[in-house]
Image 1 (cartoon, rainbow, N blue to C red):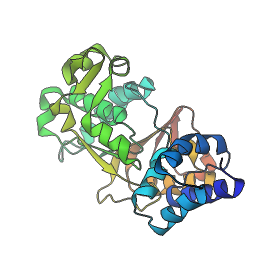
Image 2 (cartoon, helix red, strand yellow):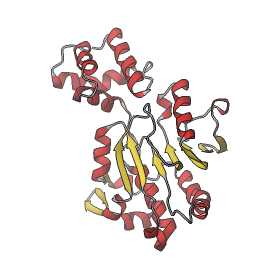
Image 3 (cartoon, rainbow, N blue to C red):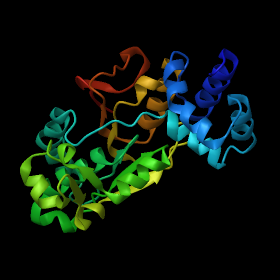
Length: 267
């Protein structure tokens, strides 16, 4: 059983390291960590946190963040945004990048890969036979190393894949079992997966055209959210598009992004 003191210690650590506010999530924290603690033979959460804090780059610290970051997603989630991307954003972006043929797309908090793979499919579909002449590689980042490993493998349950339009399923996946599909190599090559903590300095040298940061800011307090959004704003191309989750909100007084429609903003 986790004590209040142990819980607060975990809350402080996760807030400091990942910006995630778990102060109202005691049941979630205990539910996610109890089995791990028993399996590893820890006698208390303090014993575990002593190791986490002593070795911030060690296995225990990584296990803690992996356990406490929520990763639930599926293909074609909030599909209205993808439709908007194809209908409104891509034609304009293509026109403005005819000389460079370079689209800079970042999928932050990419989880198990469904979102960045969908973005890559849309790019390939939109550009069609011209696609080989363009660089539309999607950078996909997450703090959780386990979900990145799953994304790189690219194996998904049938019911997740079948949320997609059927032409995408046929073109970009192969069925490898009765209830599993695997991403084809031509699509895998279009997504670059990396571990990244949103609390760190953004590493982009060139300004971004499109940023997806969906269903992660609900875990941040207002100050942290504002800081992250400001960092993204600074790294975006003028006119670039920002997509957030449909259940998330951005305070117009605290952001320089221009509201376009629910969950879609523009620099």
